[in-house]
Image 1 (cartoon, rainbow, N blue to C red):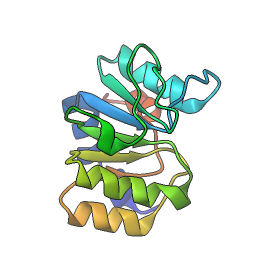
Image 2: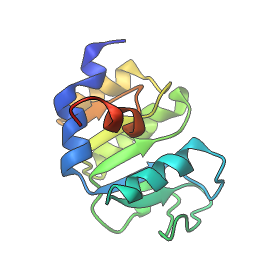
Image 3: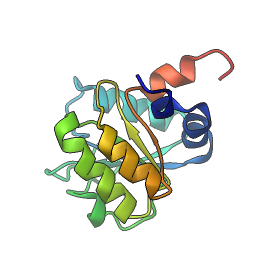
Length: 138
């Protein structure tokens, strides 16, 4: 693991200062990790925006098929897709003006991290808000 992928300042910024989280890969399937984490984000006072090709309403929030379809400002794009698809999502996050990109546990794309951070957008990879909120000092 590259320590730049889990910079404490970037993690703290997203968890503490960002309110609206687009959750890419979130569906109404309660058995999926994305559903569990989206529910946790809501319990922590975050607004979640489901992003899934089906554009279904999840956890009481209207879903959208793509990031570009979201009609409001997004602070963080939380990515629950395979690593080989995640880089394109990071590029879309930069394009919509997100302040941060969060790749979940097991999702790693070094080139996407380079592109995203070079564009001035904070990014963390291969960790989860649930893990980070449990760390000492949080």
